[in-house]
Amino acid sequence: MDKKSLSIVNKIKSFIGVTFGIMVYFAWQIAVYLFITGTITTRTIIVILLIYQFTFCKKSDLYLEFIRWLGPFSYFNNTGLILEEPLKESKSLICYHPHGILAYGFAMTPGFSKTIYDCYSCVSSGLLYLPISGIFSRWMGMVSVEHKNFTDIMKKGNDN
Image (cartoon, rainbow, N blue to C red; front, top):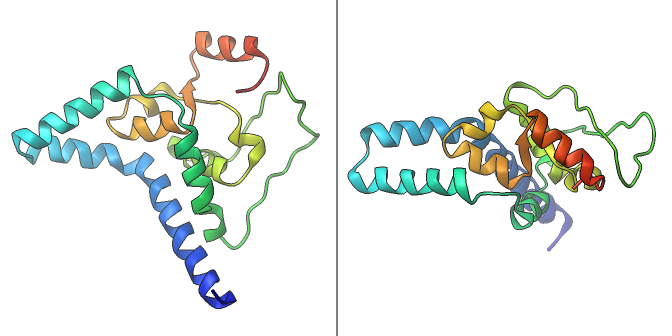
């Protein structure tokens, strides 16, 4: 494949990656719409997905590798990770700003940075409770910022 074709392929991959990131925003709206207007089969599928979301869904290395392969940040002209000091191998706390509404920027960071790829992300529990959107959030390793979750993660000391 020549350089120009490779560039086009990378742009398409990154666009798909950004689209998957946007699912954190819009999947819940689509799910609610389909639940209200859909058939009994559609409603059953949504209920099964919700049961999965609230009982079995957790961080998925496969999904993170997929996002990383898509390379959503290459869609943008300029991206970067700025650290005030090097991270330790354990017991590090990363504060991310700007995070945006529903932590979209942070949600896509595993596709960009190996440093953050291996970490848990503490986010508002509201993000995790959104129907279907919560699945994407949990697959990316996001957990509720509730006191118990936060202290449990920090006690582990290995950041992941």
